[in-house]
Structures are given as structure tokens and as C-alpha cells.
Image (cartoon, rainbow, N blue to C red):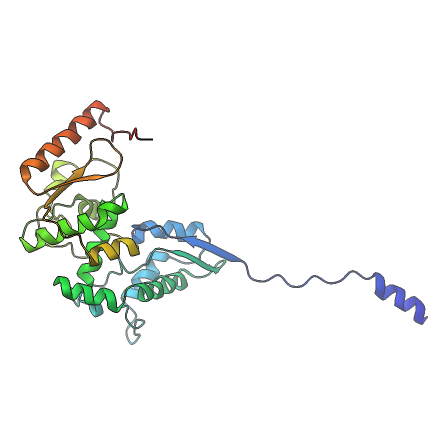
Length: 274
């Protein structure tokens, strides 16, 4: 009997070890808005309403305190600011599959705290802006500059215009208000009274217009030392911006770009560089 029992034990199939929790990877590209991150979180299997989680983190329930360092007012924003746009740090995150969106938001805010610290606060002071304003400039750079070389130059244009009390004229701020990043802006939209219209309102928009990465934050913290006041997309369609100090040169550059659009049937010129 003992020998037979040993045979039975030897031939019994081993039990499988319980599977560990699955991990999902959530990739947030630089320059996305909270509204654009929401479908990314949903498609990667996170549970709950991402935008609701962002709102809850920005305006906690009575008696609840937000995590340290996450109040926009801690960075110099007006006390009435309850938007976390700009603070939702773009990066690659690994979370348990099915994790709540609120956990994802917490991870993004923690990453922001890790990347935006004393150095950026000191640079903001040196530039004569609040850290929140520096973050807002970075969010505009993220939307405006397609290549690394142009980032500190775009920053310089923004700061130069702010010092001269010139409207910034950055159409990306209008597009943020419209949630439209593809259709041509109409004359009515360009003249709208929205506080995000930096053509009709002086100064920075009320909040950041995207969630910038470190390259744009660093450009906002260390703008190029140039006197440029204008820029426009290059006529070759390769992504570079053409910068100028005078309006006359800007108009010449803009005319060349408009002509390139007409030649290409109203579409952005196709870059032909190898």
C-alpha cells in the first residue's frame, strides 16, 4: 500500500502558482491636455472617470486636503485657480491593470513634484514671473515648437512680449479654449473675447494650455538671449520656425508661408529634405 501511494503522489500534476497582478503601461506624450489624456487612460484599461479624478484632485471635498505641493496657488496661481492643467506630468507609467484613474492622477502629480522643484522656482524668480507663470509659458512652448532648437527661442519671444506689454498672439491658446487643434481658425474665433485669446488679451492665458515635458519646462526656465518678437512657420514645411525682430521681416516670412500654403492646395507644405 505504501508503494502504491508513492506512485500516486509522483504522478500527480503540480498545482499552478497563482498568477500575479497584471501591469498596464500608460504612455502620456508631452503637450497633451487633460481632455486628451482621458481617452488614453480609458483605452489602457484604467477604471473610473479620469477628468472627474482630475477635478477631485484640484478641488477636494470639504475637510479633505490635497497632497502637499499640488495646490496651484502654492506655485503662484490665483487662489481661485482649480485647474490642474500643466501639473499632469507626461511620462510612461506602470500601474496595475484596472487601477482607478484617481491613482493615475496621483502618480502624475507626484512625478510633477519630482521634476518641477527648487531649480525651476529659482529660475522663475530670476525671470520675474511666478512658477505657475513659468509653467504656463512651458505649456505654450510645448504646443508651438516642433523641434528642440526652437524651444528657447519661442520662450524668448513670449518673455520679450510680456516685458513690452504686447499681446502674445499665440493661436494655440485659442485652440485650447476651442478644443480644436486641426481646423483653420475663423476670423470670429481670432477676435473672440475668450480669456484664452492672447490676440485680444494681454498677458498669459489663465492656465497652462497643455501638460509640458521637461524640455519645454527647461526652455521656459532658460530662454534664449535674443531680441526676437515674432515667429512664423517656415515655408518649407519641415517644422522650423522663422524668428524676427521687426514686423516687416515677420510679414515677409508670413507671406512666404501663405504662398507655400496656396501652392499646396491650402495644406501645410510637405518637407522635402532628406
